[in-house]
Length: 94
Image (cartoon, rainbow, N blue to C red; front, side, top):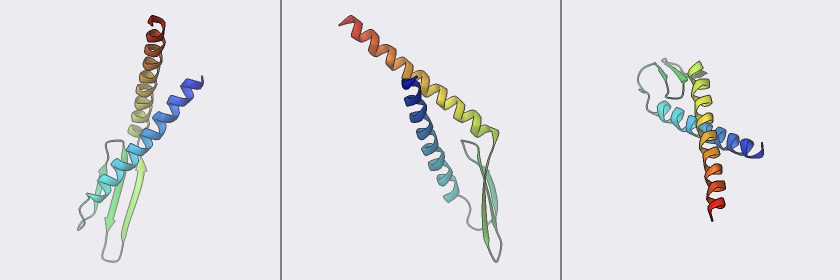
């Protein structure tokens, strides 16, 4: 259970770091002269409204964010479990 928690934490922190980087990348590549609505690779929606008086940016989550998070976490857990099994098997041979 301790190993599970370790890899769950690593997977979550890595996912959220990638989420922030991807969101900021998309945000700073939006058109500066017009309003726009975009969805990132991780499912974050960015709604940027530009008027003569103000700029309003709204962020939102979609179901795609949850699906990508669960998939990424399972992938990290499988890699962690495989590495653990590989270390155990390698230790038995030597």
